[in-house]
Length: 114
Length: 113
Image 1 (cartoon, each protein chain N blue to C red):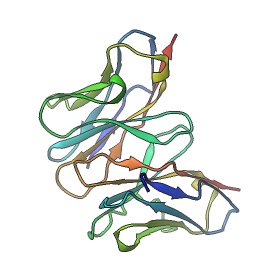
Image 2 (image 1 turned 135 degrees about the vertical axis):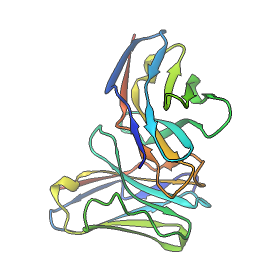
Image 3 (image 1 turned 60 degrees about the vertical axis):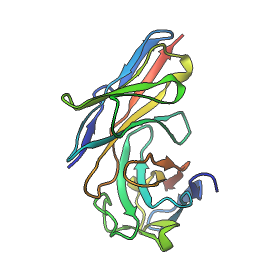
Image 4 (image 1 turned 60 degrees about the horizontal axis):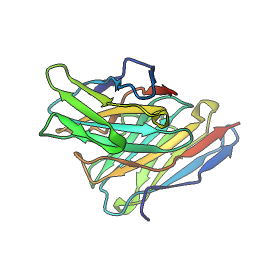
């Protein structure tokens, strides 16, 4: 079985401060990891992914994520938050074997205060 | 088209009626997914098609739900005898395969009254 945990329903951060949105996973084989963002009344947009290689991956809008195999984590980070980053963020995983679909976490709402 | 297209964008139906939701994936994408999302909540996996392999139907909540993908392209999700708890946004996504990101459509908002 594969699963994703996003332990925080909501993260609050002041504009200009660094932000972290947490994600841990469980999967058979090696993980393929993804982050998506959903703005109000909009579809899901892809932010970044980890397939293999460098543990630090960079994505859209200045976001980055660090893959940590020993901690089975893939936390999303940004050095300086913007009010416009306020949205719902989803982590997703699938294994590199088998024929399972992408499994999503429950989502974390990010609120960036001016 | 350039992205994943879903129709209709909104559907209001009476309890007990059948509905069909359509998804046009990005051309050339071999993988197609259906999820549903209740208001502001997470994504619930429904069904996954990958190429010519048998679909993964493990997420379908009941036998009232079914889906097909014709010719490796367009997919239709059918809900029979709709119930109020079926009300949600139904999202379709497609990707090139296992290690590739999925691209999502705008979804179909289903309301069962």
